[in-house]
Amino acid sequence: MPPEHIDTRLLVELTEQSQDLNSDASRITRSALADFGQAVEPVRRRWWERGGALAAAVGTVALLGGRRAFADSPSPSGSTADDIMALQTAASIENLAVSVYRTAAGLPFIKDGNKTVAAFIAKTTQQHEAHAQAFNAAATQAGGQPQNGPDPKYKAVVDQALPSIKGPADVVKLAITLEDVAAQTYTKNVSQVSNADLRRLFASVAPVEAQHRATLLAVQALLAGNAVDLVTIPVDPSKLPAAAGSVGFPDAFYHTDNASPISEGAVK
Image 1 (cartoon, one colour):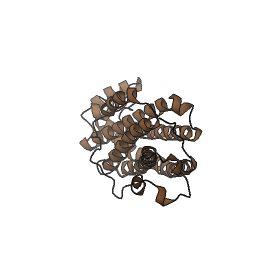
Image 2 (cartoon, helix red, strand yellow):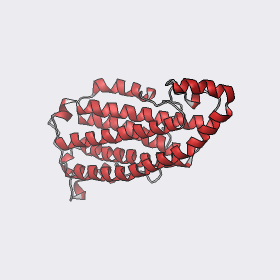
Image 3 (cartoon, rainbow, N blue to C red):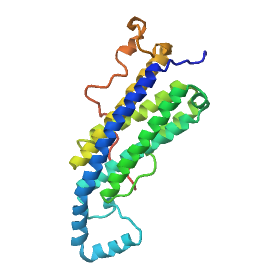
Image 4 (cartoon, rainbow, N blue to C red):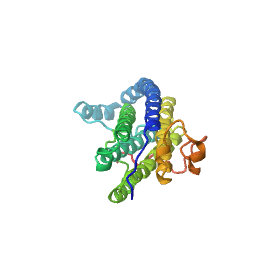
């Protein structure tokens, strides 16, 4: 099988666009987190105040360094507990994505291969790390525990796929799976969480994951069509494979059929 050569001019442009989108999303994310923190603090304070002796006892534990999640106590409303689980599950998906991209970056055909592809992976890893931090920060602000582990369902998928990875196309296929479930889950979470600031948070991250997927789908189609030399601008449309006319473009309405349930990656 001949080695894969990638004309990276378009990939450079897509990476820059991804950075621009992520920068815009990051500003919204920071704003949503700040507003959410201000909104939940009075609620948490009222809960502690009306808890009487029980609140005092648990408060003593908190002062000693133990942080109790709302989801672990009977006091928070169902909506708050659901919000925490949704945030923890989102963090678990991001944690797994970071792990996969880091593993990919260490593979010989990535590490010693095309520098632009390696740079794309490095930048995407940083974005997923930031997303995980944002979701955990919101979960903590709501009184929950941070989720530092991977999503259990998709970790099994990753564990099964990693031994069979032989080249860039295999890495792209696995990454598409994770980016898609992230985008679908966060899109659905927008309608599931109870707080407007959390809706902004999920809505700010979902399009970044969707763009990651779109970029990877375009690369996948060209790899599969042995047309990697056509990843360039300008390009002769008549030379593009048929898939280039549809794959890689964001969905007008993002599907959520494969969205992870809010409890999937919640802290047990």
